[in-house]
Image (cartoon, rainbow, N blue to C red; front, side, top):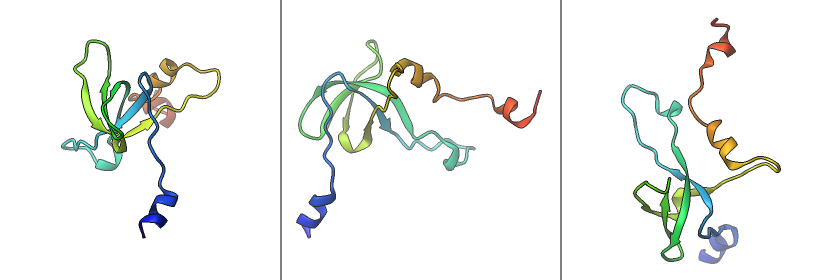
Length: 102
């Protein structure tokens, strides 16, 4: 049974300096869980403590966090785009233009 699971399991291959998103399903009162943002980031990996534990930091002045690799996903940047360009696109948007509110 273990060998069957291991054949389909993927390992986490992060190294120091990689940018990752962290899964944090914090529940906000008064907002539907389906509409909440569960991913925070981008974080930079500061140090690999062991095979699955990493120390990450959101900015140089922020307090570092120690998290498990199962709570992280690596960045995906399209060719020719900078990571900083994509991080702005995941924020909250004004949807008034999309629904005809002028």
